[in-house]
Length: 221
Image (cartoon, rainbow, N blue to C red; front, side, top):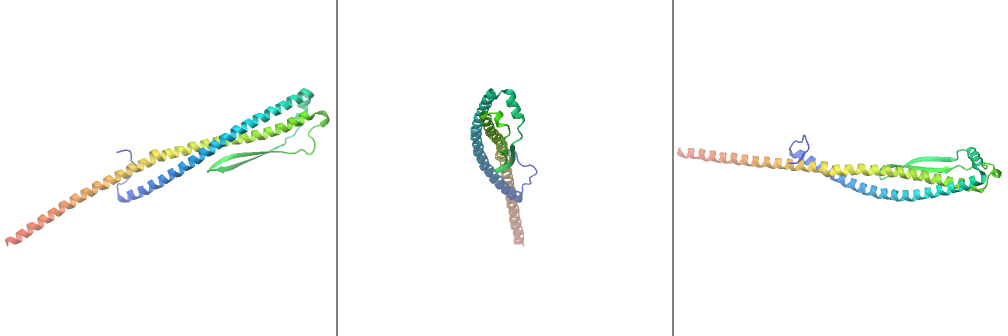
């Protein structure tokens, strides 16, 4: 006999309760399988999205660095550094979470704050600085979106691993143990029924024998 649930009494009431628990476990396993399939679909969607975001971020960063390099060649390193030091913080990051198939995923949205006036003296710079700043703003937004998507992908991977462990636990441990215990109780009850039947048969035979004997004694008189 394979492993069974400990502390189980082989009674008919226990058998009925265990069958109900088995049905609940099987429904739970089926629901978790559906959830696992849905999580896998979302995981690959995120993976495709990350691939595109990574390409976009690298492209925007390369463009921004190219613009800054050209601006530095025109203005010089020291003047460009002086311009950058005078710039204030112009990004607002909104960090939220969203629920996807019961998994809480991070979500980042980056807004660039508009300047009331030009952040630097336009006469001391050139158009390359403006273009470089715009490219870098777009690159930072893409990088923030990419980081949120990568964090979400890790969360999805953790949820998939956790769900898979639960499915495997139900499929290969809990449900088989319940089935083994059900078979054990059924066999025990069948054996008890056979013993009861045999015992009743013997009692009936003795009663018949006793009745015959009594009838025979009366016949003598």
